[in-house]
Length: 601
Ligand code: ADP
Ligand code: MG
Picture (cartoon, protein in one colour):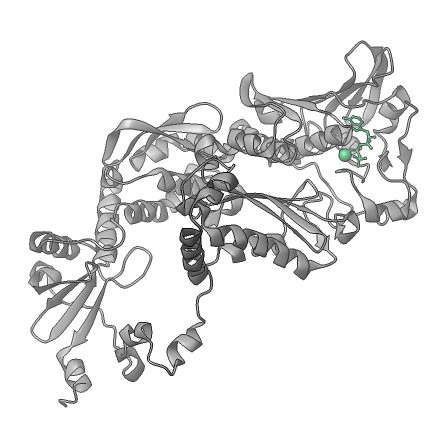
């Protein structure tokens, strides 16, 4: 094949978003995998040593480069992917800036070996800190092998910013995973210090997701496919049962390119509004297919950001594609692997309509204003707390601090009973006290955890059957980095291969509950922390998460004895009047307020 790389003219390079793309091993690997995919590779293997700080090697079976191209590829603005200005409006390749290889080669000890299929031998170019040291012919299979050793060896300031080998390896595995999801037709492998993190055969998106997100999570995924107005949306989205505490499991692609975009993210979250709690994020993998002229990827050097020509249309297409799946609530029929369509079609039409209506109702909540001002008597409005409308309710601290502690405000109340299996009603001489039993138990649990933690470790309980939990690689890295600290708060976990950990003990308080979501949330929090000091700063909020999970949700019948026990524990608890999230635990209505309502005074 004739050499086809050219150096872009300055008039064109001036139009390309400039900037540094080599931030850490994972960003090098992203650029190199993009090149392999652009070269038509069907098999890409990534090897790293020391989290990629010591060594990175990427081997592909793409079309390779001639000797001239191999040398040219190391020049700035040398690319085979665009030639003239207009090409910027029709980019179909992942790369086009012609800057990755020279940037990487200038900050490492770099070796490029490449052989075109038609050629009998390959070329090896050795570069050190941007200077070519050696060029020689070599025997090799067709394709390209690039190795990057001692990244930033000549830039100690940048080297300092790199994290531990474990953390960097986690970032690498995440990059490989999200690129692998974009191209299920390409085989990928990723080996870190001789440990295999990923081995993915060529397959289809559904099978690839099972391998990347795990079989268990994949069971909660349902296919999305919709095309309108030249915008095609395809992928898989999660049932509301499968949520994460951050956006890390939202994978969005435009024409196969992984992107992070506010408009796209907003559209996804809008679709889930009212279906999942605030602060929770779904698991979503969608590709948005658009004519290349409709999207500008030349906004930022990392090409993670894009600009749409028809922003609103793209937003609406994504939102409606996802909403259409959620509206059908396929998970209510039966949880199943993401081949869903056939089975859900087999269920009764009437049943599906009912489900659709229910989902619709929860998706489209009436705006607050119409709710309060609705003229016609409406059963829901009638049941609303009318007191609030006429009479501003006075919320007071029911446990004034001047009360001597031994008096025990809450224990001194006499119990009237339970309302709606959610609230405890009590009275004192001149007050009606309403206690949110859920918030109260949470506050009590939080206090207990804090006490246990400050006097050593949180009491934990071994699980009869250790649980395995699938995580992102970053979360797995956090689990091993903070292993000691996690033990202090009652968890025992260890790596279980790939992106899975095995949990063998949990805080005793939550032993009766399903702890998987809690563990995910905690590790997602920890992923952001680098040091134990940061862990200690966040200790309270982690304990409040544990407390929150220790409590039975929803309605729950309590016996007289249990109520008294709870009131007693509340007396021993600081800040008993609000739950760890700051919501009130109890509410007082005075006799005078009641008399006013009933026009007695
Ligand atoms: P860009 O990808 O933006 O063109 P790069 O610096 O990443 O810029 O790569 C420069 C050129 O080197 C590419 O345009 C391509 O022609 C060639 N190249 C890089 N990596 C490979 C590879 N793995 N296989 C074949 N050719 C490659
Ligand atoms: Mg490139």
